[in-house]
Length: 561
Image 1 (tube, one colour):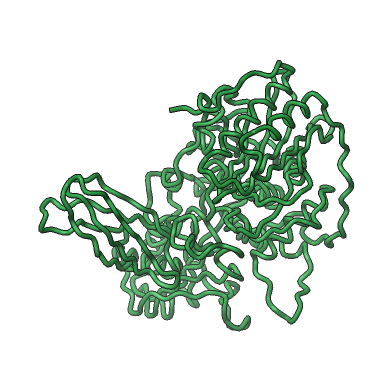
Image 2 (tube, rainbow, N blue to C red):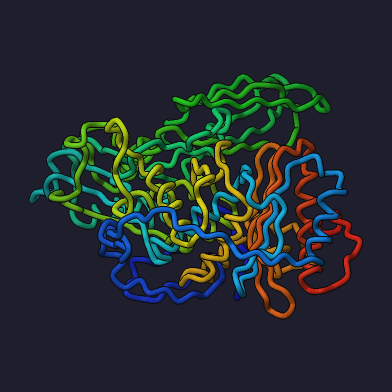
């Protein structure tokens, strides 16, 4: 197995995709990792045409069978002792370890009990999306009109910027990365378009259902990790708020946002105070608008402060960006920027069939998106993957809904995860899946089901790509500063919510045996303590599976500076 360091989300969005150079072999320069992916034809085929061979199969009934249990007594003695005697024993702990060699459960502690997984929910979403959609799947963003431009380059009617869920669409080209609004405008200008006699519409109707997860807390929604999962996502649906100190006591600290459309409005209620006074800052964006209020006191000469906030109705933001970019490329627009979602009568929804596709861009592959989702734990990407799964593979499940309510693509995606688990023989009857990212406090899974899922995906054609997407102990992603003494031997997804922490992934022994594991802690109220103990458990697990004697472990030495 080969690994390479992950990069930051912003760097990832700006990295080259090279998709318009097909047919070719894609070089994943963004991760310094060379993987040969066949992309011939991907640039020209709409996502709806790329359908898995299992798409029309009927949904089966629950087919789970009990997992074979062969508890390792030495391992059980070691881990049970840690769990029972630890200062962290007042919390709820669940652990499951499965051997990939024979699929047997070799250790469990409350393994069949329900726990809040936090971001370990992402292993469910990414594994199933990877297997059912394929690593080469790409999202296509298109520009449509009712009619082609006339001889003068005029389009009579609205111009529709139509998103299909691309997580990595950006505003302007960056180097070789041309999955951008700018590239769409350049394509239109190159085709001789001069004028739009209508408005620019940002259309996010490809996804049906809610843009946020079921069970998300209201105070999470303003932050970047609570961004809306729009079919027309742009620059991760987030903005940066930057605060800098005043140069004089009579001046106010400066508040800036990286928004060039005037879409974000800020109210600065900060006061400058003497150097040495405490820094106190409040930042608030209401859930239904893009008005940001900043208040508090800022000492003169203090270092800069920054925060990442989500953007409400990102499809309208994208439309405003597109309108400005069109004008900067010499294309006049008579109308204004507007947005459209799926909350209209079905007959009134935008249908690309029969329309003129004037331009399109495609971005990074699903395999690359999953890699950054798991390495950096990006909630937005996980939620888009869930909705893409539900939109693209809806034929695999029944559409029956009580009361005639339309099922959202997030709901379909959650049902497809349950279907996939059932087909792998994993019990789903007790699981509660409410989102794709794990931000929901309503999610409930078992460590045993999680370890079984990890074992099951590893046996598929996507198994190596999935394993490569996980953070590497002591090396990269959210494990870059943890478990340094077993660097490269553990790859796992981290998870963190208030009072909850988790770690699920793979452990490889010195002789090459691979085990899947899941450790979940709920209801521990001390800051960071359960993370240290999870690392202690993992070191004990590694030593036991390598048949080494138990050693005194100092978790504080396991963190890189």
